[in-house]
Amino acid sequence: MTAARLWLVRHAQPRVAPGICYGRLDLPAEPAASRAAAQALAQALPAEGTTVWHSPLQRCELLALDLQGLRPNLTPKPEPRLLELDFGRWEGRAWQDIDRTALDAWASQLYEYAPGGGEPLRAMLERVWQALQDARRLPCGDLVWITHAGVTRCVAWLLAHGPGRAPQAKEWSAAAPPFGGWTVVPLPAPGEAI
Image (tube, rainbow, N blue to C red; front, side, top):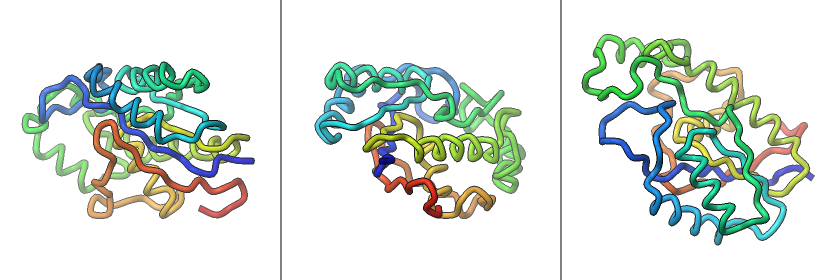
């Protein structure tokens, strides 16, 4: 039996000033917000048969550990493919201080451009696609990914379009769960088309 549903859980509010680029920057989350998110998630998840993967960044790991504290039957596993996009030299800088020409280049070449010399969306979509393929082969019930807004957007794109289509900036969804929130999507079984 494969995972029937994928829970895409966004980490709690990180400790960072508004307007800062922090994709791969390893920031802690607000502890009280993380505990509250874990409590809500622990109550919503099925009683058994759930697997938990999390991004190795501490804001995700904290939520995974808080969840395990409430549900000791869940053993979270760090999964590097669930990391947020790497913004390279842009990390830790205010968005308003990043060169407008570079931002425009990223928007016009969303799929191939490496923002700040970091990771292009193409590479992120590839790694998330591989994680989805592995998730589809798990012999379990539901699967929880404690991750980031960017990974959630990648999953939505991949489930709607598959791995072969490059998104344009105007098509890229801004929708993602709020901090500490989640969305649940069906996870197609191996052999089912995506």
